[in-house]
Every structure is written in C-alpha cells, then in structure tokens.
Image (cartoon, rainbow, N blue to C red; front, side):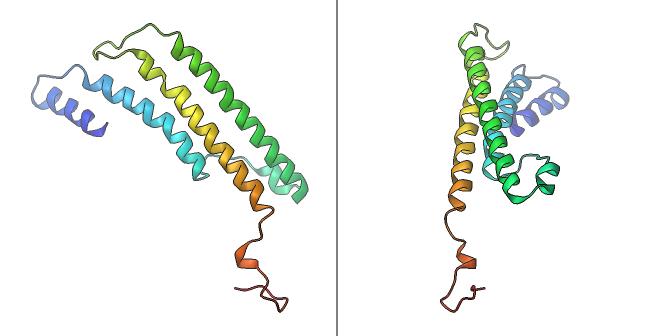
Length: 148
C-alpha cells in the first residue's frame, strides 16, 4: 500500500503524468488493512477500554462485568458480520479506475468481523480456562511456599 501511494505521488508530481489507479488501490488496501487489524488488536488485547466501573468493583462483580462485556462485544461482531455480508452480497457496483468489483472491497467487513469474532471467542476461552488452571509461577513446591 505504501509503495503504491509513493508511486502515485512520484508520477503525479515528479513525472507530471499520474497513474489513475494508485489512489484508489491505496484506499482499498487501507480499508482491508484497517479492518483486518481489528482481530490483530483483539489478539494482543490492545483495544481501547473504559474500565473505571470495573476497577472500583469487587472481584466477583469485575468477573460478571467482564463476561457481560464479552457477550456484548460478540453480539456486536455478529451484527457486523451479518450486515457486512448483506452489504457485500447485494452489491452491484464496480471500482471506478480498477477492473474490480466493489464486492471484493466490501468483503473486508464480513471477513474482518468473522476473524474478530473467532479471536474474541479464543480470548474468552483463554480467560475462562485461566481461572481453572493454576499459575505456574505461583505453584506450590511442597513446602507450603510458592516458587519465585
């Protein structure tokens, strides 16, 4: 994407003979990159969170709030997947300078929603399983004291 944008700028301003397709191709690649980055950020737990209420609540309430938020996030991704699918399926447009159907561009939304839903499910499974598996750093060594 960056190379395409640089190529477009070079030919537009240096060579005075611009390519018509570079701006559109860079824009569509940015759309795909942005939407697929959602699941990468979910995997690394890097999305923005507002956790003021959870931080002041007791641990049992924090757990409940965490699972309620997980359900709401999953519902959001399911709606995004469904609406993205409908938008992609009902599309009849084509790109203006590239010989590509806009269906391929719009497909970024349901693909990203599906990847994010999968990743979110994996995060919930990992969070739930971690409650039942002891932390290896805090394991007992037989003397009643944890290892460091």
